[in-house]
Image 1: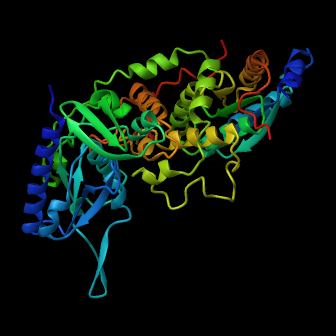
Image 2: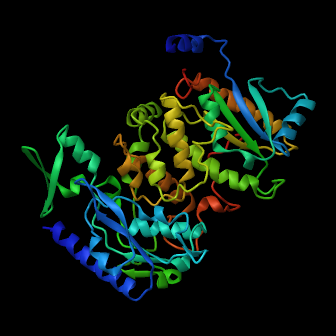
Image 3: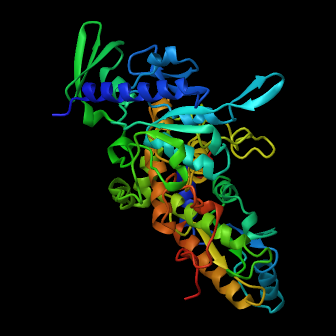
Length: 149
Length: 340
């Protein structure tokens, strides 16, 4: 099984699959803006729209890795801009601890990425998605945490 | 040389006297403490209502249970058809008192109903490690002499150095008696100490963090692969009081029930996350693990993160909110992606 995956990784046409959790009010609109502005960004991300980054249970992120996604991207409003006043601030603390814990368990840093993007930042959104895709591509497929059976 | 047997006797005597006085003066209805266990190297919780029974209380180095677990749900009694909250005195080493303080912060128990009977804990033995050394033999008797523990059984006798066979967490412990603060003055009797913050440098965790990602992953797999997910760690933890734990939920089913390593790791990760800013390092979870897994590594890591990031130590004061209950505009966010 592992041999097959490694072979696959060595192939140059391997593309990571990244699940992106975008908050409804800023990042999702930012992604939309990137779209209507015709800014190119990699098609590796699959977007899940959530009401707020505070809606994210850390379980969503861990579970995505277990389900075999190569990378996770979480994006919300900039601190202070949250539609629900403090959702992203609460989420930021949660993400900080999750990020450290994942690293402690031996998940490569960069597998899970967090960012802020507002509704007006289509360009920034595209740049950061490009960056994420690059990072995850370098890491290769998610073999560690993926459930094998 | 430290004479642990002597220390234990002193602690026991003080604890019994305080408990007896409290029951005599009717300041409490019930005392929760430790009693002699049915096996060597074990203790059992005991609930005492009568001052005659106070001699049942014991203190030895196997009192690993965190008694704060028994405070939830609130202890009530049916008096003339009405449920009345009982006043509970609870024998508390430092970590038990800290979990009580944290439960008070989380509004799970009433301050008026709790009296903390402080004792100065001298360390808990790591039962699993001793059993592992002994192997398949049955332990019939244990004895303390000086700073050694002598374990006896059928045709064998082995000596263990007490300090080496203490719980990992107890070796790092700085809060051996209940931490006292102004708001808790009326609730603590017996031993107590004033604590402002912890000096713990988390050396073991810092060492572990230096490893590469693959080494960490391999180590974690090795440590946790024996886990059968019996959830004894959850049952023993005084802060795992949710009515419906995430592991029992099946709509949605958060993770599989298999013995595959990703299913095991997902449980331990999320258990760690749920204890962020709450764990008081009592070591009850590791002590009850039937597979002898040492969970202190994960718990201490979480505590280190919380201390570094939010400068918080759980269970020290009633006024400070735990970091996951609050937020600040200027929290560190160095882990977030930036454009350059």
